[in-house]
Amino acid sequence: MADVTALDARSPSTASAKPARPRKAPVRHRNIGGVLPVLVLFLPPAFLLFTLFVILPMGEAAWYSLFDWSGYGDPETFVGLRNFEVLFKNGAFRTALANNGLIILVSLAIQLPLALWLATLVAHRMPGVTAFRLVFFLPYVLADVAAGLIWRFIYDGDYGLVASVANLVGIETPYVLADRNLAIYAVLAVVIWKYFGFHMMLFIAGLQSIDKSLYEAADIDGATGWQKFRNITLPLLSPTIRLSVFFSIVGSLQLFDMIMPLTGGGPSNSTQTMVTFLYTYGVTRMKVGFGSAIGVVLFVICVTIAFGYRRIFMRHD
Image (tube, rainbow, N blue to C red; front, side, top):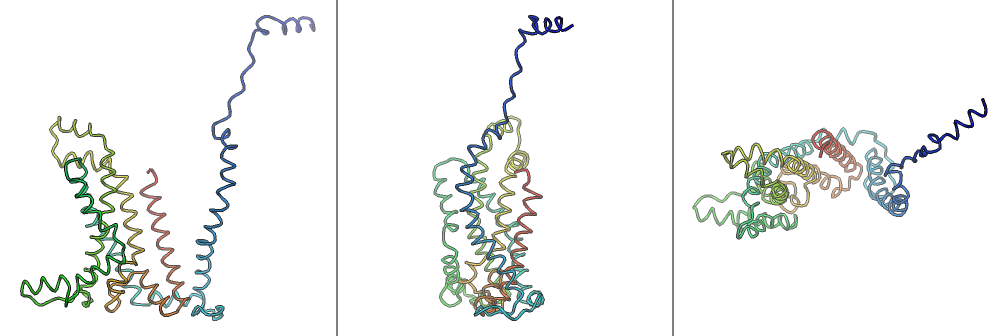
């Protein structure tokens, strides 16, 4: 039996059989050796900077929010959650929350549709279209502080453009920024003017990436302009629209630089946003503990909205 077994082991069929080739490792395993030095070289400095300038300040703000502290010396008067209790009972903070919600609503309902409409007009290549894009985009390039100062002069009831137009028409000059019922609408107009150019450029980039043959096929089928917009442009532009909505919401929650030179949050706190409220009540009045509580609330709102929106609406983008 041993000889037969040895003979079978030396049989031509067995001898001629090729040994099985070892399976190649997946690419991700073969690339670890190349990625690892890069991670070791660049990840620790980035993580250190992120910890020093993001993680630690966030932790300190959460800690200081539990104290009644002016910013001098060490925080000693522990008040627990009283700063948060005072914050949510503050009428100016509730006004700031409402103003942020109003800015988001106006941005989504007016600013983005206006930007999309203008993008469809200037997205096509034609003589002079670059100049139109530049004119519409210039307000966004302008610094927020400069835009606030310019519009403060325009709204001025004594020497501004509004006063000149009112005198020309022969009506009483409105002091827009001094009227607590009109000031927030003046701010909204500036917000629309300032940021629609940014969203317009996003939409132009999205429109230029759409295959032109789709529109040619729609023209052959006799589709109207609205049908092409509804069935081709909107579906293919939806990732860009979702991104633009995300930028609009987050930017509206962080609005600060333009409002301070324009109204300073007044009159009577009617144009406060959460960030201007934090600056006014937490920084200028040296209530660091109370301001830290405002910052914690603002951080929680921004993170919840940002991650929730990305998880729900942008998970496939």
